[in-house]
Amino acid sequence: MITGFMQLFEKKYVGQVDAVGEQYIRFAVDGAKRMQRLIDDLLTYSRVGATAAEPAPTDAARVLTNVLNNLQRGIEETQAQVTFGDLPTVRADASQLTQLFQNLIGNAIKFRGPAPPRIHVDARRSGDFWTFSVQDNGIGIAPEFHDKIFVLFQRLHPRDKYPGTGIGLAVCKKIVDRHGGRIWVESNVGQGSTFCFTLRAGGE
Image (cartoon, rainbow, N blue to C red; front, side, top):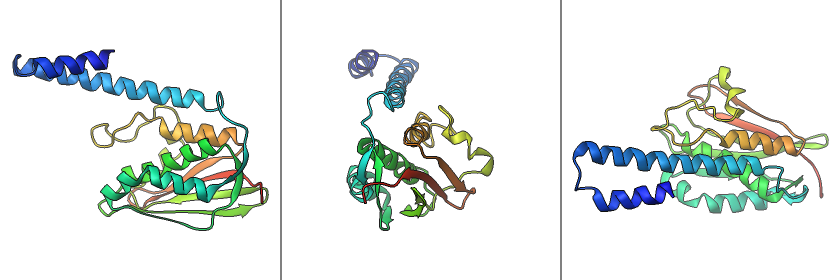
């Protein structure tokens, strides 16, 4: 309601108030929109595990293909190139695996360097688990932040440079934890990042 009424106010009265008033309107509309995004992301975080399906044999390659279709606009706008190797069938909630891939690849597109994003997804078998990797050529992450980035609301960059609420990677961790795996990052500033996570093998 706040967002809707502020947008109506902005549409009707901009031009009828002075510059300071117009600035206040923009601040209010922007704040309401950010509040809505934060609420939406918190709901997404809270639903992990609450409304999730039981893990079942899931084709990771098919899930990733759907994710790339969902991200097609961002891929085209940034001239990103996303490649992937032979991906296995794992025991997972397909909708949550979709969200996991989408968050990680979406971040790789967002936190890009001067060159177009180059992202590669792969997997290797490790006993009863598959270890997935999402590698990019982006801005990288300093080692001292490798654990902090998975904590709720942790942001490493100003909002005006990289928009977001700081919840995406916390959602990824919660999804992987629910599946009995683990997630981590290998990265250095200016050298890209490789996000790795494990999921239980199954369905072969």
